[in-house]
Length: 155
Image (cartoon, rainbow, N blue to C red):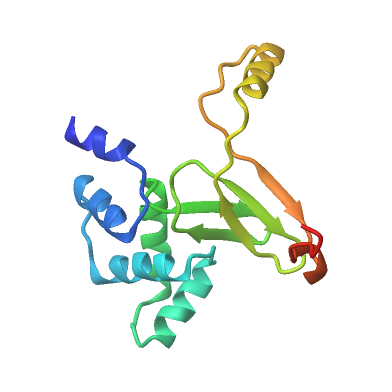
């Protein structure tokens, strides 16, 4: 019962991720901890290769196989996020339900929490006959020009 409660609690911090590992009885090796720390520090979605390179650049010796095995174990338990893309998998630190903004200029994926209006959710339910319990949205676009992001002088 305690593991079920722990498994439902959103992971919002490195400490939450470590707590979830422990609640699930996962061994918290130094390599696994290195990966979790990196993902929480980076706050971006990284490939396994980028994770391997960054950890080794930091002087944390870890092998390719260890990176891949730990990423699979962590994402398999929903402790970290795994995004499947045509050019490979990306891993991120947010595992609770959320949406993504995909920048087509930089290939960057940003996490955003979007809450749709209740009336829109009810409309979708009526059209599909499916009760909506959760959702994620993928937005795609290009960087705004600097002028478009600055507050208007007339405001």
